[in-house]
Length: 185
Image 1 (cartoon, one colour):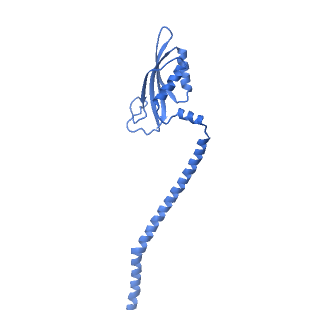
Image 2 (cartoon, rainbow, N blue to C red; image 1 turned 180 degrees about the vertical axis):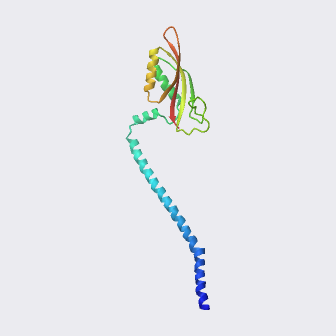
Image 3 (spheres, rainbow, N blue to C red; image 1 turned 90 degrees about the vertical axis):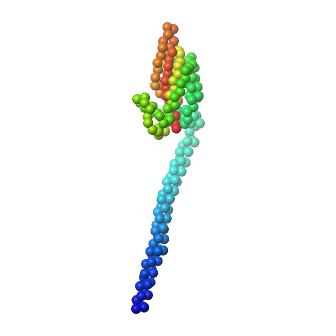
């Protein structure tokens, strides 16, 4: 009987050792192996991102400083109200006009105006903000159309959203111009 109990005890001890020590260690090793796999995948993606970043940096370095300045003027990464007004006034001055009654309304926040003119509810997740500018100018029709043509051909993206005018007997008009320009958030 002693000879049969000893092998049974050894088998029970082996099963207990497997359940209490070996299996938990094996499960922990599987978890670590899964983590290693996901970290290796993340490392591979980060290497792809770094390669793409290097490629884009080389392309960026190939742009001339004049081109970069033009791109920054086309769609700036911040709102510079003073520079915008100076640019608009410079265009007007080229046609013998001066900006007056300047009003600025930033619409890049959470309440962007919709097409119906009402405020949108909730946060605005758009990467592009907008800025509305209203001003008055006085001049003859040819000066004003030249001003609009130069405004159209300027590097900065500008939408003319409204024009109204009053005439006088001398052929000089008082114009109220509403524009909208854009910037990257």
